[in-house]
Length: 54
Image 1 (cartoon, rainbow, N blue to C red):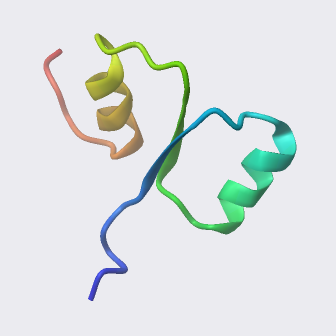
Image 2 (image 1 turned 90 degrees about the vertical axis):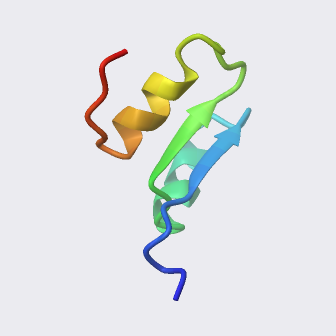
């Protein structure tokens, strides 16, 4: 069973219409390009609600 695996999208599509589509897909979160490599793990941790010490 893979339903419990969270999906995070990395995309350049950030228009409100795109965000509405993503919400319907039930993804855990969306990270918009361009990304900041130094903060990527922090963004992922926030989406997944992980406790971190960054």
